[in-house]
Length: 236
Image: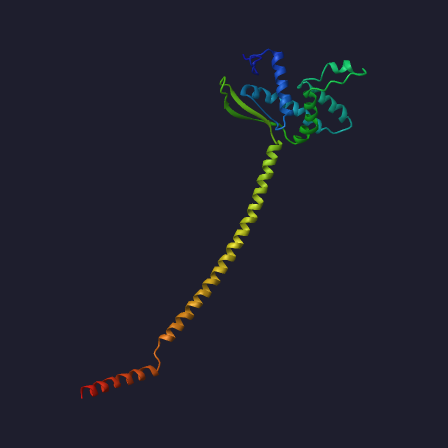
């Protein structure tokens, strides 16, 4: 039977593996783009690890009742086990004059962001907080790489807003082009009607000028009668 074979060992001891998963969880939550690049087996192991911590923050944001403060503190302490703790030397330096307090580690910042921001974001989402995207194999050791990211991140929201903005002006432009085409078609019809009227006027004027008048045949007859008389006189 497959006892104690639920997870990948990743070639590390238990302490090393847990420390590595805590590091990856801290890097994922503190990342500006809310995504990190790692190998595919590590991403698959990190996904359920970090989603358990996000579920604790979601439960804390959905608390109701009188003892919400104590219960939220308990959930925060449980989630702190998924990240590295603060500097151990900070307690020793507390209260000493002239000693600058050491900065807190990234795990403390990740825990604060987990409960302040991510818990509210995934308040109504029952699981599925991360996404894994395969990138192919690495050139050096041929390891399969992958991106693990938080869903509903800022990049996705910006892309959705940009898509909505692109759609709304497009419809307005389409309506404007339709109205312009209608106006152009009406103007073209008017121009065609005016041109046809001009052509008809020209044809009528040409026909009127081409028709012979009553005076023209009389003149031609006078010319014809005068020419033979002149010829007879010349012969005599």
